[in-house]
Image (cartoon, rainbow, N blue to C red; front, side, top):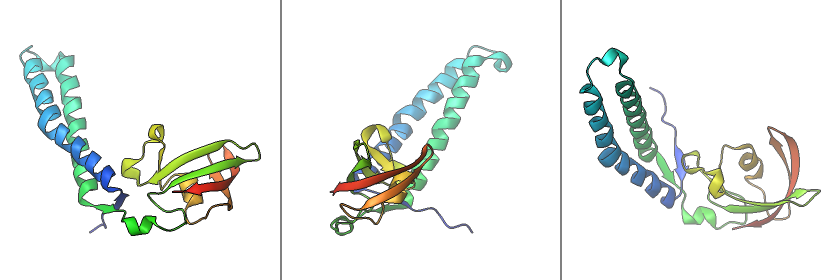
Length: 158
């Protein structure tokens, strides 16, 4: 039997996934079932785009429910004592300066389940996070990105 993937995440990240799961199960599922009922009432299902669309949405919702249940079941909560060191680890907010031009960037390193680059949360599996993990303030680090290599200096770790 295959080993289940562990999803490292913060307590807040797990709560957000649980909230999304609850919304999908209690609201979205019912909406999709209702759409299917309405589409069926239109008659011939072979040329019924509303029915096809509703069935596709139902498949997506059910797939997302399964994924969320798996992530929550296999969640590994990042403990506070893991966050108290002065080293870049999962759950830390890291500020670094890109060398030599000095563009400063700040990200929180989280598990892949709660990554959201638009909120400044990057996955521990991302090239930037992989490069920064284990380093300390004032260290210079080479980061391999899809656009090429960049050199950064860690400014702060919170």
